[in-house]
Image (cartoon, rainbow, N blue to C red; front, side, top):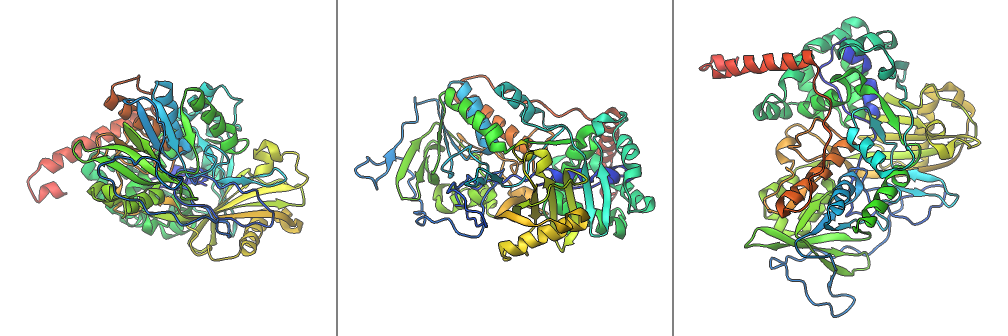
Length: 604
């Protein structure tokens, strides 16, 4: 899906922001079964809904008995197994080193990999029958992969790139690619590969290399973004400043700094719908600024993006799962976590309870627990676990919401090129963002297809969710033809539609206070995922890199608590460029001086 959204840009940033929105969404909901329907029959593989939150539908509800509600067990003492319906006690290894990780994906697998390599007895539990298999996707009986969304890997994803090198697998990524940004009137702008261009200081480089590519919005309108650049310097100068920006919507910020109506309607509104999956009126200004800075403005080359040459699960997750298992870790699928055993005296977790769809229950003892699930999955667990629900930090999570996403894959009968391999759609559906990708060009398995394979996604797709698969595929084809007229005579010969309700974190105004820290009030329980707050790293927004880093950070917290092993090395983002760093320091000094003044001057 996409990446982030935008904030302060001068006309430079404005000219280049479009590629941001192409980063793929990550969703994670290991507690909810998938549903799907497609003209082609699929094998019955229910994915772990993650791709950093995942609850999928493709119209036919996956069957299974209703989940048995969790039972509070404050003592945490598992019952002796006496029958198939009684709780079984799993072997989780040597006491003192037992770590249970709830949820796969980048966060869960990242934590499991490092802890297993440090000698911990790691058990990763996931709702998918095949954790690490097709990431929120399926493979047809003819062997065609259908994965939820096409995931982008951006220039600053240093830790994920390092992981792939460590695994020693064939390089799974394409080269950096160009991307197009479309409106119903035609091509709005395009993004070059910035690392192949002459290098300039950030903002200047983006402006120079995109100035001739930005077609439909006059320079005067783009220049109205210039005052917004100040917010980059100011939004995170202190925790109080960040919360102030978080309470403001992106729309309020645009109005405050005088962004033109044309620039907003033709560029920023659709950019945010695709970048952070929600309209500007419903987005935190702080998250918008941070995401834009990470993906676009911090350095000229940050816009560059590459793609996995196949499914992320098969190219990266399966080798990663094999690595974890070789280090002694256990990956257990088909386990829905229903409760947490808490030692009330010590204020720590003693393990978790799970249930299969057949109702078989198991207790997994633990010396540390990591929850690496998304908002929707965590809310489900909190609602069944009184011990978690009793804590204010977990109850606050219930304030958070998810956004709907629809992911499609379409096979066409003609082999046709697209102008760009990755494309963003703006204004094609009211209140809905969209992208499409030419998989025939991006993914190896489709290069020999007789026709063309297109992946197309819709974000903030609540108004489209009730439509039939046929109606959604029709929209995909109609949008494609408006951008690529040569596709007018192409016929759809196969398609798949996957629905993901409440799948992606909604960073709404004021949501920061409800997002959890990685440390919790339970001394040995930690959180991971790109939606947690307090991460001391520059990877922001909906990000696979951020999710993976939170997994490593959670592993380091476990190591610090249990006093065994060496912490994971986390590669930082590149430092701010000198002119940006100097401007931030100057603003910090000025604001500090003003805040020290007596009222009313201190409010200036």
